[in-house]
Figure 1: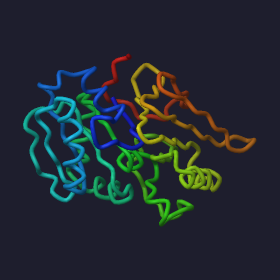
Figure 2 (figure 1 turned 135 degrees about the vertical axis):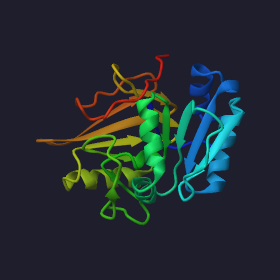
Figure 3 (figure 1 turned 90 degrees about the horizontal axis):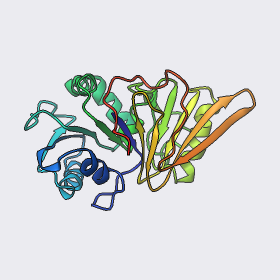
Figure 4 (figure 1 turned 30 degrees about the vertical axis):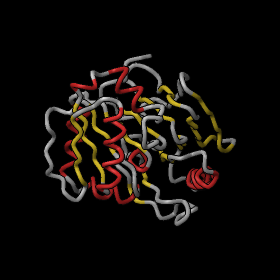
Length: 236
C-alpha cells in the first residue's frame, strides 16, 4: 500500500492516520518506522501514532540511516519537510533500500506532505521560495510522469503545478489537500480518504484538464502511472 497524505494534523484529529491504523491493524502489535530529517517533527508524528494506540514507534533519521526498528515494520511513515532535500537524501541513503524492501514485502508506506512530493518525477520545494517550480530536483519517480503537490488548498500550489505542466516538465499533476490522502491500491483505482479533495491535472491537446475526488471516491490514473509492488489498503 502506498498512501499519499497531503498534510498531517499532528494530533489525534488527523482524519487519515488514526483511522487507517485502528481500522487495519492491531495498534498494540504494530511497529511503525518514521523516516524523517528533523527529530522534532519525527517526535510529533510518533505522537500521532501513539494516540492511535501504537506502542512501538522508531525514528529513522535521514542523516543517521542505521537506526534499527524494534521489530518487523507494520507501517513505514515517510515524513514531510523539504521535498528536494528528502529526495536527494534518499537517493544516496540506505533508507532507500528500506523503502524498496518494504514495498517488496507489502508493508504499507504512508508518505505525507513533502515526503509524498518526493515520490514524483520531480520534487518541488516551498512555493514561497520557488513559485514557478523551476528549482525542482529529480524525485524518486514512484509515479511515472507525475508531479505531486501537498497542501493543495493553498492557491500558490495550484498555480505552481499548472506552471510545471504547461512547461512540459510532466504530463500529470496530483494535488492533495491537507487532512486528505490518496490510497494507491493494487487491482483497484486510487481511493481518496480524509476531509478534503484530491485533484488530478493532466495535459491534453485542448490544454490542462482538472478532476477532483473526495473521500470514498476513486481517481482514474492512466495505466502504468504507479509503479506498483506494495500491499494494498483493505477496502472500507
